[in-house]
Image (cartoon, rainbow, N blue to C red; front, side, top):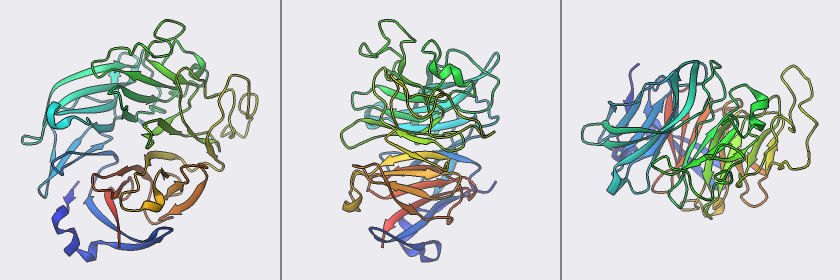
Length: 362
């Protein structure tokens, strides 16, 4: 498929490519930066102004200086169902380490499992080297759904990775499996000593459990982790995962099974955490970002979540965690990722449009 990378320095002269939209913080321009993408999943920003974009079929793309190139050396993926090459995150110390992080469905005996790799990326040759898988889901599955797979670098340099239940609902309550959990490891794959199960009682990588399919994750302005996950029919959730806590799936939920049946015991149970927010009906949430306020001070600390089902960006108040705005409703189809760029612009990926867009103030 033909891919077009619109040079960043030309955007201001390309008014024909922009569309204007009204928001609660005033009018904004939405500009396509890359088009012709094949099922894009995530975008990351390099210090030199370049971009990295994952496509689910296994391609990692490098955009720089008006060109878009396929990156060599990417790990093999099992691109079936919802699996494939999923998240990309650029290390905060990239200038010195040259490292990036990739999550993907790793082909294994028995199917695939969510995996996390670290690699060195050379922008001059658009290539990866020293690729190391630092985490593998303990049990592979032939199921094609619920890989989770967002990667977040914590303030202390450890890495959070979200993993869905892989369609095996009850296993999200089993701390001897990684299904339905947030895991936390060091950049070398080591187990942080303060992980809740580092001393026993569960797999030592697990940070929190009882999640269904968390496809979005981000740090807030205080450096705390937040996640957003798919419910079933209703019950999409925003959570703030804390060490060792149980977020309920599939014992409690604000949704119901697609068949219409009741999930678990209802909406609450002892020892299980309540979501900070839930949607009913479901919006099929994916990418998540918590905004710094750099270009839009009124949105400082607010949470932005892409909707795959209704094709909008949900803006939630960062204090009350209540949905305040449905941005670009039905304008861009199946929004997969939402990120804040280095200069404070908001960027998002549309799966069906096959495009990366940049949002800036008018």
